[in-house]
Length: 130
Image 1: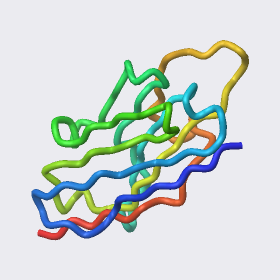
Image 2 (image 1 turned 30 degrees about the vertical axis):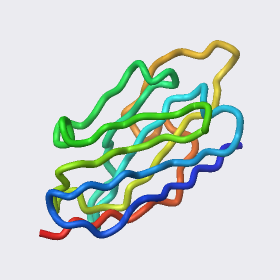
Image 3 (image 1 turned 180 degrees about the horizontal axis):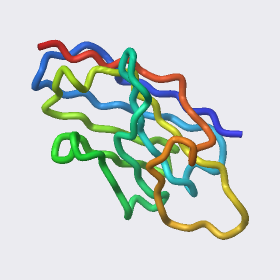
């Protein structure tokens, strides 16, 4: 069982920055892909960024490329999402997610669909004012 706790959200003006953290409990986080998703009011949850367990494979949605950076520190069981040049359209609740292990072989890959993830945090609100 893995528990995820996000932190670092808040209210920021357009052009500002925030750094989200995702603290994980359990032993599988360091061997699993991690993703960040967001959900704005009245909209479906959408993919933001994902990173493989090694950190060697990373993918972003087009609208955040060049502004957001996903990273992880497996020794600390923590993942991050650095968000720069924030825009009002980035306003949403942000969630981190990870997968449970499937068998003894660990594949260094990532996932962009929310149904690929098993564990989710409670979310942290990010509000960007214009």
